[in-house]
Image (cartoon, rainbow, N blue to C red; front, side, top):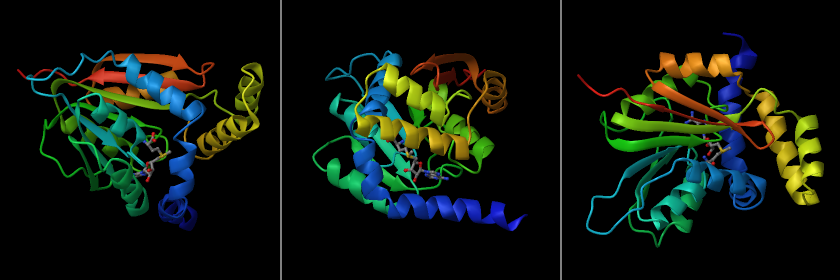
Length: 232
Ligand SMILES: C[S@@+](CC[C@H](N)C(=O)[O-])C[C@H]1O[C@@H](n2cnc3c(N)ncnc32)[C@H](O)[C@@H]1O
């Protein structure tokens, strides 16, 4: 394997480890926080009601756990995994008062859970970062129960620094939020951005059916989901 490719994953790991505080702050407010709330709304979840068993969620690459914490606060039972110790430390601290919220150190491509452990498995802003993409998607499908949902939020092929800048201007974003959009677009350009055909193939190969793909944020972001086929 070429040296550059070999060093890419350790570099990404160090980036999140050293930048944990920065990422926790960056993802807490602004366009990235807004789009994640929109993503959760798009799942059309049944309200959690006392007395019934809470839906079980897995947040893959949970980072500082902002999305996971929001779901736990809504009454769902949420587990987050990430391979960054520093980000998990922040996630545990921020979520310390939440019942039904727990975090584990794990790589996305080898999840430490039994088959069919969760009703919903999701990843926000993660799949485009991972080196082992197919293995990550397969693992997300494996740990989700039959008829459960696997969902994700990732960059569309049109996300670029120039499009992100134009979108920010059009939507009168503050300078700070514009910087966040540009940083996101830069990381998308350096990692992965998805065309619909590629995304459909990846999700189908991972075993998902009834795919739904929607473009948001001026078309630059995918909200995607698929269903784990029901057993025979
Ligand atoms: C852009 S952050 C998104 C964090 C969180 N999902 C959110 O939306 O707030 C990407 C996260 O993916 C994690 N990550 C990247 N590759 C990973 C891997 N192979 N295994 C586990 N976590 C990974 C990083 O540590 C980081 O926390």
